[in-house]
Length: 77
Image (tube, rainbow, N blue to C red; front, side, top):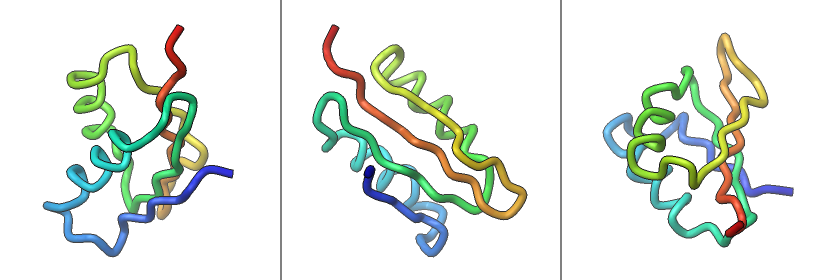
């Protein structure tokens, strides 16, 4: 089971840095579940800009109150 990173109680200005840091610390093939209070679509665009082709993004729940996304680091292929 993937670890859960619930950022709902974090200040908004800290969230992206916390999420990106969690991603950077993943081993290849690992992932985590992000829990947020809104659609993290802007975060997806940031991931796509910084890690294009080197991350997975799978919605597990899409609101309206809770958004859950599994973010993963693929194994080297």
